[in-house]
Structures are given as C-alpha cells and as structure tokens.
Image 1: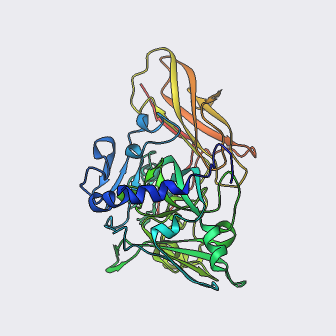
Image 2: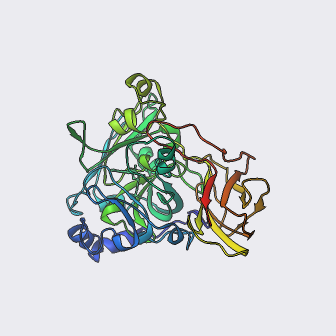
Image 3: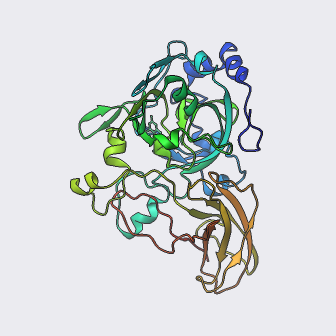
Amino acid sequence: MIHTSLALPIDRRFFLRQLSAGAIGLICVSGHRGSALAADESRLLVHSKAPMNAEPPLPDLVRSWVTPVESFFIRSHGNTPEINADSFRLSLEGMVEHPLTLSLAELGRFEQHAVTATLTCAGNRRSEHSRVKPVKGVQWREGAIGNAKWGGARLSELLKKAGVRDSAKHVWFEGLDSVDDGGKTFAFGGSIPLEKALLERDAAPGALLATTMNDKPLTADHGFPVRTIVPGYIGARSVKWLSKIVVSDRPSPNHFVADVYKLVDEGTLLEVAENAPIYRMPLNSAICSPSAGTALKSGRVEVVGYALPPGVPGVSIRKVEVSGDAGRSWIEAKLTSPASEFCWQLWSAEITANSATKELIVRAIDSRGEVQPETVRWNAKGYLFNAWHHVPVN
Ligand code: MTE
C-alpha cells in the first residue's frame, strides 16, 4: 500500500460496490452520446459532435488543479461505443506465459491505486500551428488538456500475473471504438515501451488501467468501463474503451501508432515510415486569463494559466515567467498548485499594464533548467505546439 498525496491506494471494494450498486450499469445503459451523463456541451466548446471533440473555455480550465469531468476535453477519433458492463472482458495476450481474460469484477480484485495525472492531446494548440500554415485536423486552442485523479489497477500487476516473456519489448492497447479513415474501419490503438509499462514508482506507475475518474466511474466519452492512463505520455497512448492488451517485441502496427502520432515536416509516406511514434508530452504553458482581445485597464492585472512538465520521470516545473513588454522583462509567477512530475501546475502573476501593453507572454522552465522554446518548427500534423504562449490584449 502506498501513501503519498498523489498516489493513494483506493479501496478496491469501491469499484465492486459501484458495480453492485448498479452505478456502472447505469452509465452503460445511458452513457452514449446525447445522454445526461455524456459530454456536458454547455461547458465545452464543441469542435465536432460525431466524433465528439470538445475543449473547455480557457478561464474555466484553470479554476481548479483537478479538472471537473464536465470541463475535461474530449478527443475521440470514432464513435463512443456502448459497452455492456456484464459481458465486458479485457484480454491480455501475446508474448506472455498465461494469457488473461478478465471481467470487470476480476479487474477490480487487483490492488486499486489512485494517480493524479495530466492528460493532454498531442494536437493541443494546433490552431497556433495553423496560423503559420494551415494544418488539417481538429483546430484545438489551448484547452486540450486536463488533470484528473484516475483510479484502477496497475498495468504492471497484470503483466506480472501473465508472465512476460524475455523477448517482449512493447505493450499494445486496443479500444472498442471503430474509426473510419482512408476507406477503412478499424479500432483505435496505442502502444508503449515495456519498460514504461513495468514502472511502479509511487508518484505515478508507468500505466494504470483506470476505471474511475475523479472518484466516479469513467463516463462514456472518457472511456467507460476501462482505459489506460499513461502519465507523462501524449493522450493518444491512453486508450479509451480498452478491450485488448498485447505484449509484443515491436510497437503496435495500429494506424495511430504506425502512421498518425508522429512528427513529420510534410507528411510524405517515407517520412512517416522513418519517424518514431511520439510518446512524451512537451514542456508547455498557456495563459488562460485574461482572454485574447481583453481591454486591460492601466494598473495591476492578474494573469493566470497552466504549465506542463515534459513527461520525464522526476522532472517538474521549476518556474513560470510572464512578460507584458514583448519579452524584454519577465515577472516570476506564483505556482499555486502542487508540483508533480506528470501533472500540470497552475500559476498566477501580477503585471502592471499601461497603454503600451499589447500582449502577454508566458514561458515555463522545468526542474532541469530547460526553457520552453520561443518558437517551434511547423509540422504537417500539427503536434506538440509548445512555443511561448502569446495573448494579444488592448
Ligand atoms: N482511445 C480510443 N479508443 N479512441 C480514441 O479516439 N483518443 C486518444 C485517447 N484515447 C482515443 C483514445 C486521444 S488522441 C486523446 S488526446 C485522449 O484519448 C483523450 O482522452 P479524453 O477524451 O478522455 O480527454
């Protein structure tokens, strides 16, 4: 049993109680799009409804360190599947001695852990790439990010039970959704190195098989009944509606590993084939208030936002700096939330505005001293935009 503020073991009976009280079944019956328990569109800016892609308005995003489910971004490539909790099974197969097939009740018998971790889409801030040169895909602003308390079994414990063979190197995940792309229909998939899957650090395990989000069963849009959560990695590796885990000697051939989530200049087939999948999230930060275009009065102005560490074990945010004079001088922001390697940090700063204040800028510095880059190179898929964030004001 672990006792740290960020990784508390939770009562595994909680999960079973939810199951027997029908809470999970209720979500199963009514948890598809359009139900009261699905995405709260009144609190999100909806980019597309089918599939559901939505993000919160920025001032809402930083109201609390743990993001309420209703304000949590949703990024789905295909339909939100309806899953029957009673007949649901999770399989673990491939390079293992004893393949597993688990019901939700059996999954709930593994020791349950709670981990607070930030999930962010590789396409967060894509709209800023598109200002340089248009990029296809959802035009995310700065809100494709959220921080939640996830509960479930550690992937490492299932792997230990199944007995991983020596030649294994990667763990694949497959969801129950169907995605249409290029005339084909297939399930969304992810993949992580075996070393990451086996990490059992107290602050955050390599990967969690999460069944709860902020102490409640996952909602349909966030992956009910079970999803992976891979702290420090881009959201695409945290596969929702998880139904299959495969242990292999190579990364998953799934389209979303082999072709999609990669950094490429122009996106030629050769470039895609030559480049490795993206795993880690980038050092990043954004100003969430005041909003772009706000008319500032001269005098003291409170600026608030988030900063994201780079997903490297042991590395957190050391400092956040804000400038009101185009980067000539910087004010150190106050960090207003806990520091943790795989969680965002909220911050606030006071700047003195005057008639010459035309924009606000933020940049983050991590505990290794690495500074968020001033500019980033444009890439064809619009991923990992993490340049200093500029907010024009009047
Ligand atoms: N899992 C499945 N099965 N299907 C998906 O489309 N989207 C991925 C990931 N897991 C996706 C998925 C992406 S790109 C992101 S950023 C996160 O889920 C978003 O998780 P959320 O919708 O709970 O915020």
